[in-house]
Amino acid sequence: MPRRQLLIFTISLLLLTGYFSVNAHPLAQESSASADTNSCYKRTDNLTPFNAPPFGERYAELYLKASDYYASGNYLLAFFYANLATKADLHPADAYNLKGRILLTSIEDYELALPSFTRAIEVALEEYRYIHIFIRGVVYQAFEDYERAIIDYNDAISLEPRFAYAYFLRGWAQELLGNFELAFSDFEQAVTLDPNCKVEYVERGFYYYDASNLEVALLYFNRAVEMDPTNIDSWVWRGITLDAVGDSESALKDLHYALTLDEEYANAYWGLGNALFSLQHYPQALENYLRYQELSGDYESAFVLDRIQQINDALGNSE
Image (cartoon, rainbow, N blue to C red; front, top):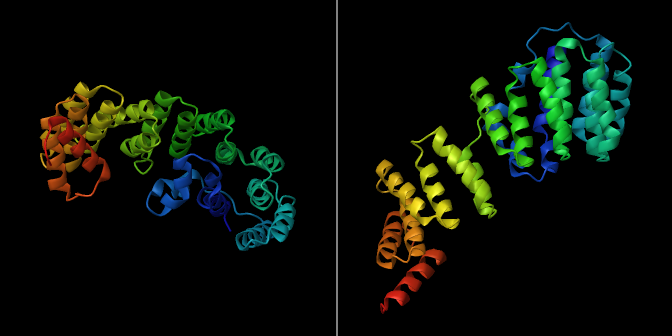
């Protein structure tokens, strides 16, 4: 089997079999689930730009046996054959990576597995070293060692400046460290290199909004507006978030602008109701909540029903 195919096989397993799931970060948890829909996670074919010579038959046989046992959950035999494979080729980087994955999966020992990923870098062919540096960065990131992950992504990018996925994951690591501007820069470089490596800023804003991290949510909604001013959700949710942080006047501007994009967008009226309620403009707030109900068909939202009741009480209405 050509080295190129085995590299693809190795890195595909690493990226698509759930190692990010140990990371509490939701984007990481979504990575394996998103693999079928976002081809950024699957485009491992662009990680090996050169045609490499084939492996020796003995190495290929041992490596594939180890891979098969690993896939079937027989980690003892998988480790046995992976270990043999490391001694059967001059550049057995893939076998060392497989040893590392086996150790992570079977005994979840990060410190014990790490030397295998490091050894893979040391024995890799020069033209593939950036891939193995990247893989170790993924392992660091999966175990929340974001600073070292970023160092490895930096090194991988220095060797292969068009490595979109390295920018993409470095952006995640920067986000997890709270370096949002650096994260945005990396996300945008990734999508420039590969349109499949796209971060949905509105969705990231939703996540932080739901987690009550409103300041960070606002950063993402601001970026969403900048990147695509025609996306109505960017304006609506920035408006909703602005109201939630106490800037209801600015919220009204965003929400009114959203209605210029679609005057029947229900969530814009919900947001207007919130902002007007915050400003104690109760008749206008009531009008917008009722419009939201009419457009959305949602007459059972406890939040909206409670707001309507509060408004009626404030206005002295009997209903």
